Image (cartoon, rainbow, N blue to C red; front, side, top):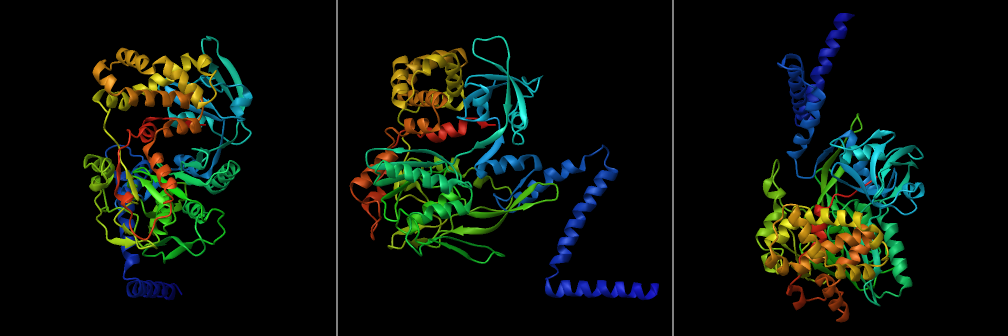
Length: 559
């Protein structure tokens, strides 16, 4: 009997090997041999290396490196980071309901979310959190990750916060019951003028579409006849949300996007004709920070000649990631297909497998080559495609706008650059807000606060502050950059005292991209015609783009 069992096992191994080699191209044996080699290496290191090694840490470091050899967007998310990665797109999380920054090793409450747990408990903007659950929380251990860990938690759990209030020396204690905190992706909705509505979409999360419908309903009540959708700086999110949003503006049967990969058959997404705004004049704003789902939406509008795209060439992220949860709760987002716009162009810009510095530095390269300043500097490496009306569009990465609006270096000096990049402007704005909150809080609208800030001469206040903090005063440069400095400084003070919508409204004043949208609406050219129009090649000078500068240099977290 043992002899027969042994013979059967040998026969089974032989047959299995033959089938694997015959029908799978020996792929199974390749995978097995590769994984065995990795396992062997880890065992050898664990068993024989000169020092004690944490094998789990080695694996955590190795997995991202393996994925990096595939493409720039296949990524590994460790167990501890999964929740935060999901919160950004799910539209809510459970926490105490504050926006905070960390300055001088202390949590500073930037804003208290209206009707949230912290507001109900009595916390105020400007408070400093110095204790959590009876233990001091100041010093080097105060990081964004650690603050999130301590402040976020399960719904209805309690946390006791020790708070220092402005000009008080005694710590106050507040018991906060954690609750659901919204993370809105539609961050601004208002009327630009009597006929033109504006919607700012920050990302594409689970609740983006219902938020969009609410925003459109609000604008409808105010009688809007034209619409600007601002996707500048929108890094993307869920495909489904972009498809739903595009569907609201397209007539029935229009192709929105399709995906296709080696093991992923072509899948098309088309409009169903149920959208309520299929004939509304539409302008979409994009820039180099608009990626993924933003490009899907912009590409669908452009290729179907449904609206006019204004701004600068988008990022060029057109790879589809599928999340795969591993046994320990960590997640791999593996690229399984590519996005294609309705005309057939691939949104993804070129890359090479492995560490591709050219890809990582693409935005900087565009800037250095002048693409941010002149539409003629845009290099189209891909083939020509055509929209429904026969207009030429290009593949090879990103969405090139119909109307280019470039940055203008006029007013940019080395003093301004250093003030912005060093974070001194942000630091000044935070400290000035904390020290003058009672006076600033009297002004409830953008117009009121802006008028007050102009009287203060915030540029002069900043220059004196910056000089004390290591930035040498240069009067001629300050004068040349005065408008830029004032706009940047005041925008941060508006954000600190009001909210993100107020910040957006302030920045949108005199924005050349929006001015172009007005021109398009006035001329009745929101729907692109059969032939490429002269306006599509027009170059429009633009004041320095504060919006992206602020987003990239601001570290504001929610808990």
